[in-house]
Length: 254
Length: 338
Image (cartoon, chains in turn blue, orange):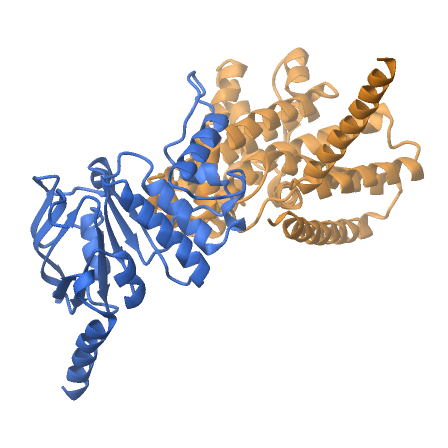
């Protein structure tokens, strides 16, 4: 896996909120065509790390290297310009709008002219194409998002994120609250995106078995640090469980 | 050969019939369908029970009532869709013609005075919007305060007494005095606002703002700008309606408008399928809602129903219409689920 070019590297990221230290020197690396699984308890710092990579919050200290160059992300838009896209857990979809309007939300295709009217036909066609490219099957792009299942919504949110020139894709709990069949479809989608080869994917996960199935490499975060990192093939659910169990017993004893 | 043609024609007819049927079904699934049916039923009922209903004189009166509610409903619909409401618009309705009157009195040409009044209405909307989105005061409270503030202002500058609306009869005719002039303005505004809501980024972002505020801003939409803009729009439309009515009646009354016209406009929007919680609604629905309310009021008046029981019946009418509308909407959603 180390043969893949590096898309993003975070070095010694520290994030403090007043007295609370959320991240105590975290270093990760993401490579093109590779899926990184991020595991850890609530409050371990996973979401904070993600918010720093998406430019939502600046780190207290540490370096971010994207595509070989060190950058200080100014905003979410700045990160997006650099090809970093994120699918939040709330998905940021608008229920009352059609699938194609959601896919192009705030990046609408318009007709030329003084009124810049929406070119709905162009957006419909582009939406059908884009969903077809990544293999998402939806009966019609005219459907309102509120009529879709949780899995279909997740697929739409992912399709929106990988639409432009995205190079780095962050997924926050992409399989949360989903049935087995739905989760299977999303896993297939993520694996297809990996096949593209130019996309570095990181996903925050809770389920160890699913993570080991999908991810090439996993990291385990505990209390703001990375306590474990390994190729998925070289570890097991049992090993991960043992680490977490040890930690939890130590905390109870303390 | 001839038989083939006959067969073809028969197939054409049946496919056409199916196309019409499909269109009818598509219509039934739209948000406005149930309320359009209610409107048609009401018109038929009043025409059957009262021969004066579909006369030119009555239709003129009816169209003028509907026009005023419709124009204000266009603004309130946009605001409701993006998750806000404007209670003060009925007072802007009363204030705007006075601003026009005093500006004209001070020597400004009437057309400029009219535009000045609209600009002033816009400023009130801007204040409503700014207080609501920047200072985080719920619009219900912001515009409730503005309601009394504007009312006080109108009563103070007018000394509480009506004035004659300025301008030549020709200008007045175009601005609402001519029989169907006001409804023509209303329909023109409905068309423009329908295009704005359905076919521009502004309209799409208005729906997105009301449908998922956080999600819309995560997608990079400036939701504060959208909301403030729709407050300005509502106020300008409210002021414009007040001016139209002042020209139509020929006198400018400080006690015109107020809460009554505002609530009727909101009721028209909501009856027309606009969600009070935001995220969904149509301009055409608000128009049809205003028609239903207008027909109800006008029809009851023709039937000679006592003024005391009038509001009672209107209120019950609104509740029944809304209940059936919501109920039909739910059935439609179930039916349309794939």
